[in-house]
Length: 577
Image 1 (cartoon, rainbow, N blue to C red):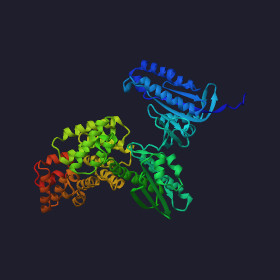
Image 2 (cartoon, rainbow, N blue to C red; image 1 turned 45 degrees about the horizontal axis):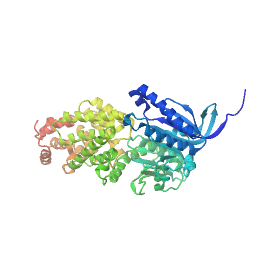
Image 3 (cartoon, rainbow, N blue to C red; image 1 turned 90 degrees about the horizontal axis):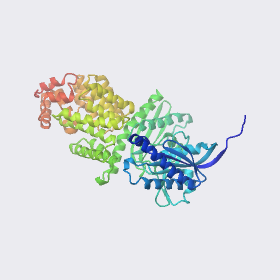
Image 4 (cartoon, one colour; image 1 turned 135 degrees about the horizontal axis):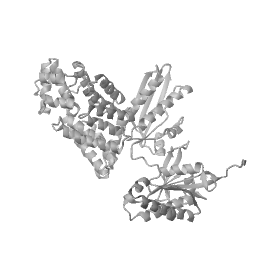
């Protein structure tokens, strides 16, 4: 038996892959396969051979090539993309072949004509990070080629990639002037959660501060509208005194969350602050003091509250970034953010702006699921606020929009939440199932807890409804929709016959039409059932001034009978049947 060691060498590796290969094959299987083979031989292999390289492995839609130097590999990559762009220019965009290319430099193991090892693996991961028609290179490749090629490079920062233990520094090749531009901030709101500092003076408490950090990263990662830097990258900053603006620039993120944990005996104090990565301004900060009767329960509670609070805080910050931009310059994501901001303002004027921005976002990008989700929610809430007579038509339209959102992104909790709201009118069981699916995808989504509470109330399950609305308010205590959450809690008290408790929670007439909406009728009914005639008449006059078309039947359509008391109370108040 031979015990010869495998041969190893240093090599520059190029990995390339066809973008959307399955989609192209579905349209024209034979034609696509022939075109891909031609691109491989006439472009990839030709440009590789010209620069002293060789293709050592091919797949149905990709190839791996070896080069004697990093410069030769990157030159070949640039030449391949340029040649392919010219070759495909006459085709319709949806039919063009685009390649992603990654280049790395590393140790490889030789097995006949094949190569294996870290250099090959990193090249494949760089290729996955590249845009269609683009090239990404590892940090060590950039060091070798930066001054040797007339190309620009965009620093993407440290990237955590599949099956590679440590983050890999990555650069995007650009066609501009030589030099390096800073990392590109994600189009979506992006955040890094820095390791929470252990201020306890006890190294054994590191597990608790690290656990808080890891759980917050996991919880935030469930928010589809947020780009969250991976745990391995975040923890490279552990134990360091960092400038958060420098961290944001290095990683290409918009926001930084940092915090600390201090334990003293059986009590713990946890602080957290959200920081704008560009300006260094503090956007939100909170302190939590807890008894450590169950350390894991405290860890779960703090994680839920922080994750639930951050989403609306980031939404507000995103609006401030977008609001002065001219409308024609905004993309679908930015228009969506503006729509969300106005949706949360709870005024008729903002409702009109929300609808306008959300419809514009869908026009700009019909395939962007969040815009459909929010528009569906807007339509159901607007119908509730207006006590619209054509409720069935509005809910049917909203349901179709919500189903579009789910079909576009089945893993988005917000899409299932919208579906739950729109199904509540026609199918309580399906509505509950949709909200439960949303909470499976994101257990910390306060709006899903709120929506599930409303549906459970109409199903007569008041105890469960109370649990969910309480959770919604605990998860997001500063949520702009808090008046609606509080009104929901008031409706549950009404259903239980606690009219004093209901009146303490239900929005008052002074709180505005959007906050009161359909819950206004509950206040009048509660006052009538308690025999508080003067107050009832005053609030009834305001109710009918806002909703002159109100009848008991219409109020029941929008509220259900809320424990069997609403019709009785409205009849006692003299509201027409």
